[in-house]
Image 1 (cartoon, rainbow, N blue to C red):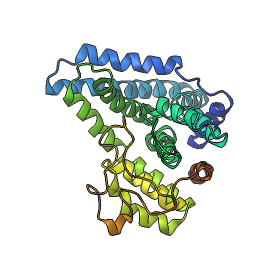
Image 2: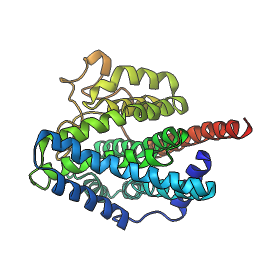
Image 3: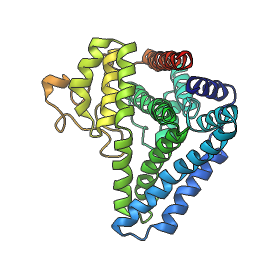
Image 4: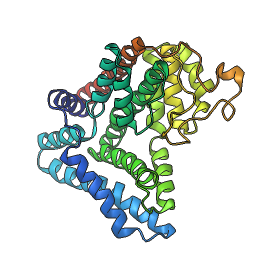
Length: 329
C-alpha cells in the first residue's frame, strides 16, 4: 500500500498544494515554541527532553492513531497515510520560490530574482552576480527537494514497512524543522536559546538524515551521469561542512556536470559550506571551494528539475515493484 499512499499524496499535492504559511505550518511553529517554553530550563538533560517531546511525541501519536485505525479498516489506514504524506511530503511546499526565481531570470529581472532568493533563504543576495544567483538557487532547491520529498519518502517507506504507518514521515519532518527552528531563533531573533538544545537538534537530525541523504545521492547518481556523480560524491563531498549536504550536492553536481559550492552568500549560516582553504586540496576540487564543471547558467535550472523528477520516477518504480511483489507473494 505504500506505493499507492505516496502516489495519491503526490497527486493531491499537485492538484491542491498547501498554501505558504498554512495553518499546519503555523501549528508546528506553535508546538515547537510551546515545548521549548515549557520544558526547557537550560540544563543539559532538558535538551533531550524537549527534543523528544517535540519530534518523537508527534511520531508516537501518529503511530498510535495509525494502529487504531488499521485495526478497523485497511482503507482508512491508507487514507491516513495519504493525509499525513500530503502534509509532510511534496514539491509545492518550496517550488513556488524556485519557479518565481527562474521566471524572473528569464525576464532578465535579476533584482527580482535576488529579492526572491533573499526572502526564501534569508540571505543577502543584493550583490550576487547572475551566475552565483543561479548557483544558490540550484543548491537550495536540491536540498529542499531532499528534505521535502526524498527524506520524507525514505523514512515513510522504512517505518511503514515494519507496521508503524506514516510515523517516519512525521519524525523526519519534525526533526528537520526543529533543527532549523532553534538555530533560527538563536541567530535571527536574538532570543535566548539553550545552546545544548540547538546543537542536539542538529546532531540528531544529522543522524536521522544520514541514510536519506545517501538515498537521495544514489538516485541522482543513477539517473544522471553515473561515473561523474560517483567521482563527485567521493571527491567533493568534503567541500561542505555538513557531510549530508555535501554528499547530495556533490553527487548532483557530478550528475549534471555542474559547478556547485564556493563561498557562502552574506547572511547564510557561516558553516554552510567550506572555503577552498578549509576543504579538500586543489587537485580534488579543481576550483576554489567548488566542484568541477560548468558555471551555473539559467538553462541548468531546468536540468535540475529533470534530475529531481527522474529520481522520483526511479524510486516510485522501485516501490511499485516491491508493492507488486508483496501483493503477489
